[in-house]
Length: 579
Image (cartoon, rainbow, N blue to C red; front, top):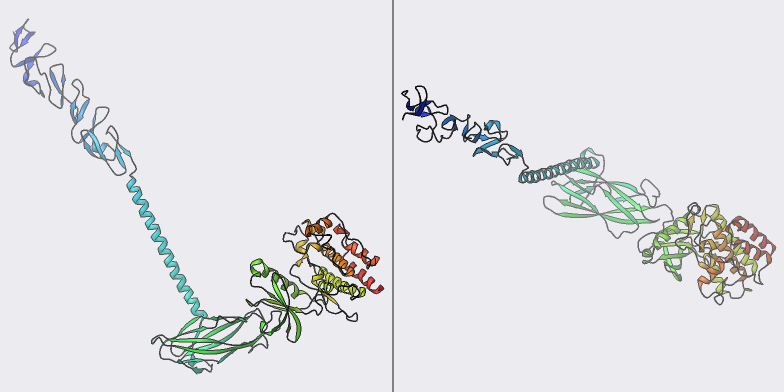
């Protein structure tokens, strides 16, 4: 046998190999030393187990695994594990750290750590994006802090800039000048202060100043102290006749400098005032304060805003829910003073009062009660009109019980004068809205007098242009006895509503009675039902046919069938002339 054989069939083919060789699958005997990577001792049968990094081939030989493999399958080059610096992929190959994107650390052939905002996949072969919540929270908190700080800085900076700008504007508005360069003659007063005048006269440029409008007067104040002085004006809050404002409010003056102050005065009523304001000067260094009084005086022009001190209340005439009426005098004239109660404003009385004042201030008719003016000083709010010696027509009817005391001609004359007042209102686009005997004042019972009766009480009056649209009665203005059917039903109405009320008033005046006696109409709503149903009172024996015909025309159920106020005047004039 060949030297490599231990036994053989022939010279070329061994049955067994000698002790230094092993038998391959092909039956050949090769040196045992040719097997590399065997973990156990190589025998005549070959290698039964290979080392790490090798795999078994041909059942008894070893072959090197692929590069970077730590272990691999026994019969292939597919890795089962990799060395410490490589990752085992699902394909069985080992790749380095640089080939796994964003992987920073490898453990047991798997990527065990990735870069920020990433995490290893479940199989450890790649890195996946994953939000870091604590980082998001920190970013949000930091962002909020930065934004808050930025806004705060912007606000503070803006405020500082505005303060500087405002300060510059204020300084520009203040007229501060060196006294030695001025031609103003100053008078010294206590505290090392000097002024251009000892009094502020608002009539210096005007004989009379306007009421309810601002008038300006100037005064200059200088500092003769060696120290800086702060100047400020103050005045009593109890002054009710005018409003006062000083500009600038406070000024700091160095030695030898003066400031020009503007005194703004707004009279609240027609008056002649003589008052004082105080000027406070404070030495900045010593803290010492000095007070100097400066006289202010002026005379306003005549207006309907009157001075309450010119009113003299003499006798209480009556009282209502909104005010008390007194007889009194105003500048030698007998007047009626309607004083508003303090509680009336809460009930809407102030609004009604202002409305009546605005209305009466516009009226210029001898058939409407003369309006002297009103006082708007708090706690002294009142309205002043001419005084009617005989009171209202309603008062006269109650006092003179028998119709013989007041002749029919006088009753017609009072109605004629009243109709002329209504005609004046309607011509000027005004609805009275509360015509009744209570609101007709009787000034004389002498037929030789030009005017015997006048209209009054315009708290309910409104401009007809507002009422000609779709407005209806929502406030219940007027007295139910004298209300037109359309008013009682809260429908639209126009001038004819006043004509209806005047028709009822004429019935009471000509008949010298109540239109709806209580024995027949126990409750007010009975009157409303009676009127809405189209029913009217029958002619009284003391009335003429012409008088009742005119009354019937005025209280006609259909508003469009009622006469105009001008026609009523002509009809009453005709009736009066016939008496």
